[in-house]
Amino acid sequence: MISWSSILAATLGVLLVCVALAGVVAAIRIRRHSREARRSRLMAPFRPHLVAVSAGEDPGGDSRRVLADVAGPARRALAESVSGMLGKVRGLPAEQLVEVLASHGALGRAVEDLGHRSPVRRAQAAQLLGLSRDPAAVDPLVGALGDHAAEVRASAAYALGLIGDPRAAGPLLHAVGAPGGGLPAGLAADALLSMGVGISDSLVHGLVDPDPRTRTVTAHLCGAGSFTRALPLLRDLVALDPDLTVRETCATALGRIGRAEDAEVLTRHTQVEHPQPLRRVCAAALGELGDPSAVPTLAALTHDPDPRLAELAASTLVRLGPQGRAALAAGGALRPVRSAMTMARLQGVLP
Image (tube, rainbow, N blue to C red; front, side):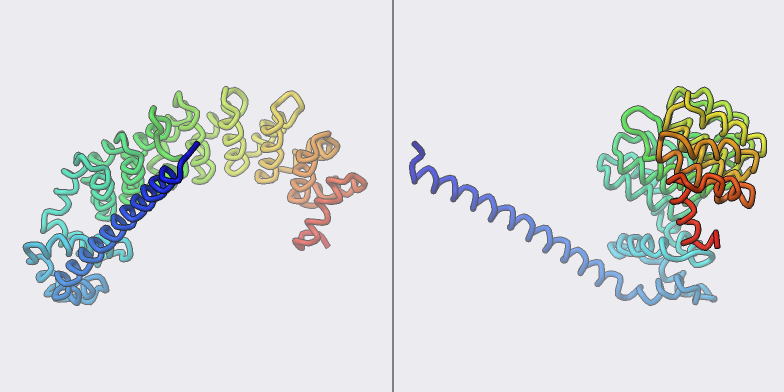
């Protein structure tokens, strides 16, 4: 039987833990407030000069020289403030702020900090290098894509996207499927899209990467960026890739950037022998492609026992112009057809 003294002792123990945790939280807040107050004091004499440079209102360079001459503890506070401003300004003011950081040696220290024992420091260093948009930082940041800490890998990918140098495209794609977690697909895709047409060669290689995550991201990028060089590979992967997600993503890309001959590829993969998710994606992709040769196949699909596929086929017919709508009207008694026509009227596509 549990005694009252045992219950009281346990209760007191819990209360002491709660009080200790509250004390820790209070101490952290006090320390953070103290640090912010100190930083504000250190920056007070230089804030007008930072604002002038950031606003592009320093034609004679006087404020820039003042900032470049900052020394002592104020230099670190200035570096933090400049980093914050770099995320908000572009053009000449951003270049001038980067020059101030370079004059303090902050960019060189950031490269060194990519090897720091603290993952927070490594991530902050990667972000600063990205904000500097310095092409010389590409190689160190590519190395950071292999960091064991996920936040550092993510910061390096984000930084490479800001710099926008296509040299990083191949390593970024490889990092998506790297063992141990790799990169989030969305983050890698955003970074790669910012690099422009120079990533075309890397995309071709990415479509034959052994890892399906890399192939999926690459196929998405091909469709999002209109990289038509990849069309032959996309057609092959729709048919042959062992990973269903890759096949679906390639089909979507074909719908966005394909040619008239790709209607046949997509039509073929709406047939019953193919996986149901792929059939649905291909039906939707035919609408994106917009080739009227798909009308007979889509009209037949409105009778498919899969209601979602039938609805997609009917909606796609609406988008294929008069020929598609005529085929849709011919099957007006079907529920998927009625739903598609009602939606089209609500959207103003049909009278």
